[in-house]
Image (cartoon, rainbow, N blue to C red; front, side):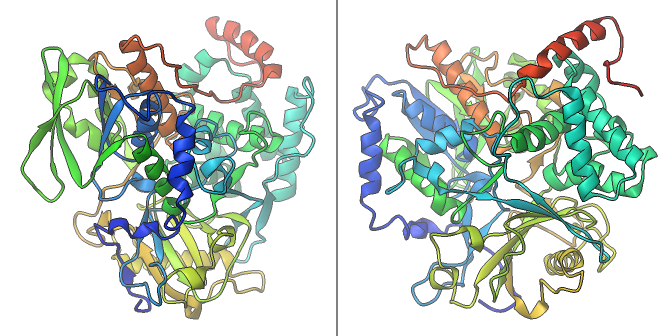
Length: 607
């Protein structure tokens, strides 16, 4: 690897990602053992219904998994030459030496909050040699989050371990919740007392709001307005506005739906997560994988799905879903590099492409058959893309995630090698010089930076890297310590889906669904009005609501259940977990439902 030169992955890295699966012949054996749980999958009948799954990301693979285990003949059509979508790992070309693998590159770091329950269930059912619970055993817990402050301000180390003795049933009362919120804010922030109290009261309003108020009033209210950020201090706006929206889900607090931010980020991720309520078993709040994503998860998944008979057609672009005679009659596809178009057919079709790519494949006839498809044009996506920095020395900044609260580009990061307990970074990757990988994500691409005074989209790739590095150092090199040094930076990687930076038309093929007010009303259901056409993806309406891998998996389960219903199948339906609803607050929600019908504000809403 040439120091400081951008490293871009090959479009077709081929099967080289098998090194850590090679030599473990038990993989297929373990998968075959799992087949005993699902009769008729090993020897599929010739009359099995055929399903074409369009897209090989998390939602597409989740759908293929559930269908194949229920005896369907599944073919997955994927744009790239490898599976996994935004979650896939990419080999950094030209970096391998001495029998090592190339340096691992990704679109951005992956993390698996403890409130995820649908995706972890799937991960448990993906066999891995030596793992009693499959891929799920490859998850590792982060123990704290670092809220890094700039200009020499003290950083906040926030513990992420769930409480060892969760509150007993009945202990969770509005006053108890308010006290917990205030104690955290008092310990970790410089917020004026009256602002901390106001924020605690606003959370009580959301926590005790009925579903109807959430889906109508709060879905139409921006988080910025809900917490009255404009009236408060800069510290309040940075910590509780921007820090909980743009930095985490790439959507701006000024427009982000209060329903989504309050329900998923504040309640499920932070409050109930720390209290250990509604979690994936005994999971902690934050988890990451113990190796690059494809090695730890996607490759074993592909191995298992192939053992079930799933076929993969890679390097294939979906052009149009063809609607004729009230049904989908086929899908026009071609090789990604511009090959001749052909039409593929099946009994059922599941569109599992990201929404920005899926909606361009829906022609006028298909859209006319189901108006919810047309409403997807109003769904918005934005950039949330990372840069991986390869370092000469181990640099475990914090045993969890870093949130650079004051960074204009809303930077978050994680030191990855510390969690890869099954890997020795210099032994296994690159040429032996890199000993760590700091994976950082830029969530704000449209605000000026501190180095060049330009937005990320206005910078070249090299300038983006220099600016991002400067913002990381601004947050981490303070209080008398130097965490990051220029001499330690060996090289970097950015997803080649980002092109044209610094030019008139910057592009990003891998964007993220964002959640401005009103988004809920335009999100489609997994089942459409076309009897053999279904939708899966994190833009589909799910209980988890947020654009996440959990939402992708949940939507796939809904799509498969809809297929089973259409076929009048007697196969067991996919279980779908919903977000935790504390029973202690249900009486207050019922009171609020009555008040909402009467046009009255929530009991705790004092304006």
